[in-house]
Length: 287
Picture 1: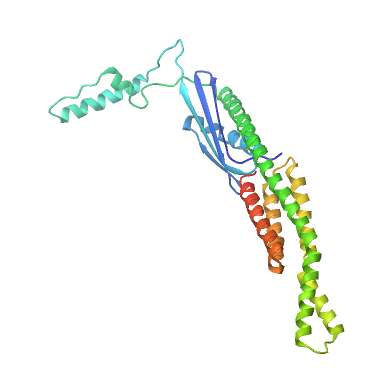
Picture 2 (picture 1 turned 135 degrees about the horizontal axis):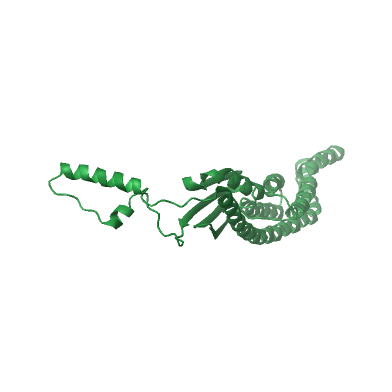
């Protein structure tokens, strides 16, 4: 299965008196790079979060942000009375140092950190809630990555088929290229030499034909095309192997271009390099 490394997913779930929210973003990366953004209160579940994500995602830069909001139940607000007393005492000391006394409303006091007490939460229940929330977001993320991967696979298969067609065109063109080059060389030799050594000339023609022959390169190119098609249908992550295959295909296209002694073969080599580069760009985003 071909999966893209670019996707986004979000999920929300209630756990006790908390509403948990999870956002997952992923972009392409050579390895699996995980960046977590979680509040201190949920830090105890960091190991579970990392383990769950790495179980499903092997490549990509992943940003996971988990947050929460307290939901007020029938118990209402819980006020840390000791913190309020300390705050008012500190305010009184400040007022004694100032000419104009400060005045705080009850809402001002409630806005200070630590004044509102969070209700006690069962950590194990909260851990399970976080894992369920994360799994829900991961499922959506993986669906999005798979859907985008299907589109990338279609684009790669289309270009890969064109590479195969160009390789066949090159094979069909080679006999004519070699024949025309042989005729031109013989004409040139006959113009320069009155009594040419035909045996020696034939030997040189064989050597030159070997240098111009790109049959092996074209055969390897078609083999790489078949391998790309096979790899695209594997279930495990395939991005690195496809990237390696693009390097090998590009090597064969470069050799084909350097050996070319014909305009048509040069055109084929250039089109091959364009197609291979287009596939390589798409593959950079595959897990």
